[in-house]
Image 1 (tube, rainbow, N blue to C red):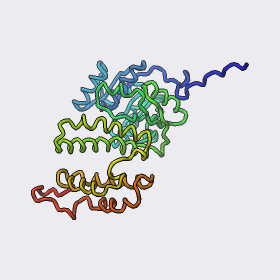
Image 2 (cartoon, rainbow, N blue to C red):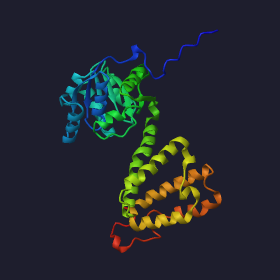
Image 3 (cartoon, rainbow, N blue to C red):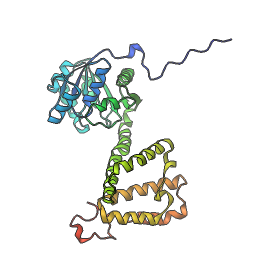
Image 4 (cartoon, rainbow, N blue to C red):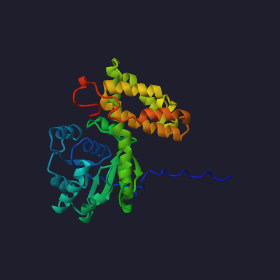
Length: 326
């Protein structure tokens, strides 16, 4: 009888020779992301040695998550660290990289890592020309700036972009932080980031608006009411996609949707544009997937075709000069 085949090695587990050596770590920009990543790297055996922070809030974050790590200027961070995390806003990243390279702060062989979702490794070209090793490691996670962020990195997906010869090292760093590497091509980074923003950032806006409306409707604990509902909706959507669509738009209840719009115009005119836009998109997807019956769609789409500005429904003079949707 043939002996059983040896088990296949885990695809995400890097070989020993591909693991990064223990590194000194520096952070340029102590926002919500950088200190959490550095703290995670410390748990993996790396050594944070320097952080740059300007505002009082960033200094407090650094002190909480990276105690005893000195706060220094960005150039000094690069002088001390083998691995440098550039965790600054997207729009500031290109200028920062160019400035560090032009002033000679970048050292050959130094790992320069940015955490922007928008950019791939190409934005680090000035540092690469100076001899650095460029990596783009974007955690697909929302950050609070507290110690809870370190725990949330366990199982978090990271969008990874790097030169092919650095791919295994980049993925190994992600795994050491407890994350799951997901390779994103350089040219796909803006679309990848737009997808995450559409799902996560806009979700926060929608939930906050929903809680405000429930409060106006007299609900004492909107968060407690929404928690189970939104948790179930998210789980269903992740499992089933468009098949999870429910509610008056997917059912074609034009009268209910019209009542919604009227109430929103009266009590929260600033939400009307978003409601109409999302309802139109929901109707399109429900139609395409056979959930919304075509014979019910005409009246519904007529309701949703109303201008968000409410030209057909002037604001009450008591609402003041803001109008309906500003």
